[in-house]
Length: 66
Image (cartoon, rainbow, N blue to C red; front, side):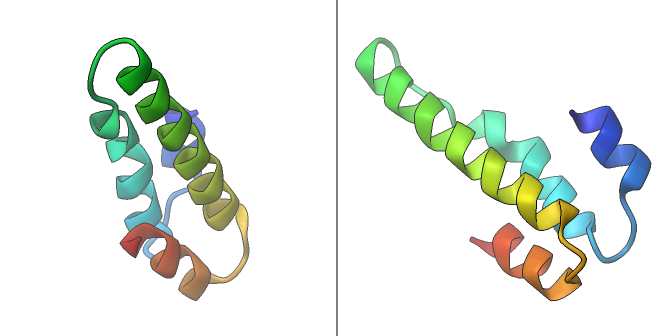
């Protein structure tokens, strides 16, 4: 996934690319706590990928800031 992001990254999508790269850092804990963290991270990753692939740079910046 990150290879595709890096290949398509430009100034308008840089913030979202950085946010995508930091998603794994949000996974913490063990057992059910980790499972919850993974679910949240997967949802965030999907939202960020959608924002990255959208043509609107402003949309990408808003998603990266969240």
